[in-house]
Image (tube, rainbow, N blue to C red; front, side, top):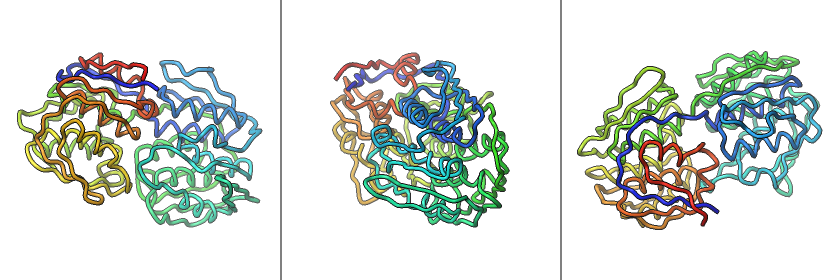
Length: 422
């Protein structure tokens, strides 16, 4: 397993270009199962989860070109025939997004066998909401030996109100409803940009969807979807991570190819902490850190609130604020695994249930730390960039799941970071 070695203390300056959004590309790839015609995706990020999903779709019989993703992010998928409507555990044990194949497989073939999903150890993320929604559309399930076995004699539209806002649950039910007979009304739906991007893709394939960007989606089922070309939106979490990297190092960093509207909650939070954030043409943002960074309390919420995927990175930044910051995690119950590692680097953080109390400003010093999940990895990199001395971060394979060329992009703006064999 690889590790990162970081020599901190260098302000980042220059421009970083953001890649396509992993969390938009994964459901878009699953949507290829809904049609027998080719789906041409562009701006697909070259990250581990994408390669895992590509292998999974090929296992099902989907043709994929090119054989290996190119730097331009083009990927052509064609599910002319689905020969194996299954997602085996051996292929998806590290990736939660595999569950996104459940709805499309049911809609297209009437059956599916999907392993219960894996992924980061940030708390329970049950798929019961997915199953309840799909059941209302006419699916039947059994869960045994770690697999969801599903079948249907035909999906029919229904009124579905999600018990809890869930992004992947919304996406799964939305894709299935596109080929269901009649109309589906999906209430308490997720509003994330990635959901809106999926709806836009599905519409270009012939689906009849209204209400994307709101909490109520209306879908009129069609008998067939066709192929299309679709460009994946920029990764708002990657963009925000780099913005905070510039801030924590006291640099001035321009982050290009990002949509500022998708970053509204993050930018507002940074402004509350005293950072200068300037929106520029083509969705660029420039960040400058003040001499004194103010503490600014935070509670993670579903979009359009502050994303849980930025909580760990923001915590790293707040170790450098002049005062006490309270960070409340309302989405996942086990998303403070990065705290002990930040403490090893000199941070003063205590956890009380779902709230972390960060007392700053504390000087950070390089140390050996271990990444526990994707976003925790990013927070430790940010801390390492600001720390005095050398930091080594083990298990960076977590970070490879969601960030394309992470260390290379940072090196290009002055970071002293390298990858080494553990």
